[in-house]
Image (cartoon, rainbow, N blue to C red; front, side, top):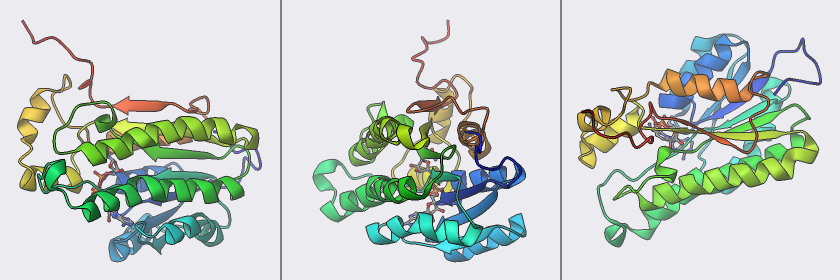
Length: 257
Ligand code: NAD
C-alpha cells in the first residue's frame, strides 16, 4: 500500500522473527527497498547484528512472542524506535520437529506453536490496528501446510490455516481504517526451520524438491520478494488474500510422461 501520509518519508517496518531464515531475507529486502526496519526476535544478538549490518536507521528489538503481552507491546515499541510505523510483517513461526504424532505430542508443545504462530499475530495485529495510519499494511506468514495433508504437522498446519482465515477477517475489519492485510504462504523453503525438520523428523528434502515443478525448495529471498510486493504500493490491491509461493508444489501436476 502507498504511504498516503507523506510520500517523501522513509517507510518503517516491523519484522518479527527477523534474525534468521525468511525473516532475515525480508529485513534485508525491505532495507534495500529503502525502509527503516525493526528486527524483532528472541535471538537478540543475531537481531542486533543484522540491524548493524543493515546500517544506520535500523534497530533490533528483543522479544519472546510466546508472551502475549510482550507481543502486544511490540508495535508501539517499534513505532517509538523508528519514529512511526507503516508496515508490520508477522513472520515469526515455530513448528514441532520431533516427529511425534498428535497422540504423543505434549500439550505444552501444541500450546507453544499456537502462542507464537497465532496468538502473537493476533496480539500484534490488535495493537498495530490501533496505531497504524491509513495506507499502512500488515503481511502475515502463512504456509502451504494450511492447505495440505501433512502427517506429524497437524497443530502447525492448523495455526497456519488460522492465519489464512485471520488475514481475511482482519482485511474486512481494518478496511475502514485504511489498513490492508495480506498473507504469503511459502512452500518448503531452505531455512533453519526446514533443516531442523530434515534432521529430526526425517523429512527427505531431496524428495520434496523432486515433487516441486520448479525442481527446488524456495529460497528465503523468493519469499521476501512476495512479502515486499504485498507490502508495496504496487501490491496495494492485495487485501485479505494469501499469495502461495511454492514453486508450483500445490498445483497437483500429473507425473511426467
Ligand atoms: P526459522 O526457524 O528459520 O526462523 C524463525 C525466526 O523466528 C528465528 O529468527 C527465531 O529466532 C524467531 N523466533 C522463534 N521463536 C520466537 C519467539 N518465541 N519470539 C520471537 N522470535 C522467535 O523459520 P523460517 O523457516 O524462516 O519461517 C519463517 C515463517 O515462515 C514462519 O512463520 C514459518 O512458519 C513460515 N513458513 C516457513 C516455511 C519453510 O519451509 N521454511 C514454509 C512455510 C511457512
